[in-house]
Image (cartoon, rainbow, N blue to C red; front, top):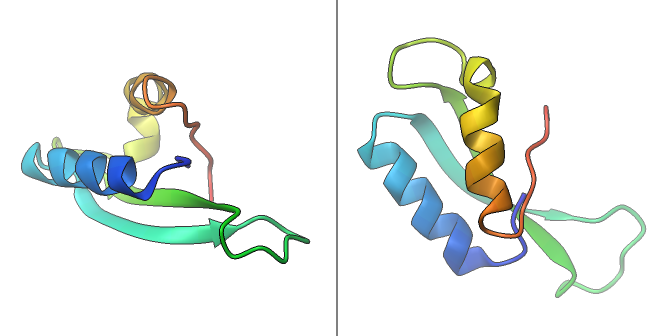
Length: 75
């Protein structure tokens, strides 16, 4: 989850170029929020370049998200 759409799209493109898939970007409105501006941007990846589950590389994804003021989530 990232606060900025441009960052999410940049990261998704970089991950895709490195072999992560599917690298989908979508918005996630916070529960109970009425303001469409108050959203987080999700970069969805399920498979790492080596074919294993992306979750097996959580440390790498956590570091990438943290460096961009974001965080990772299991859903």
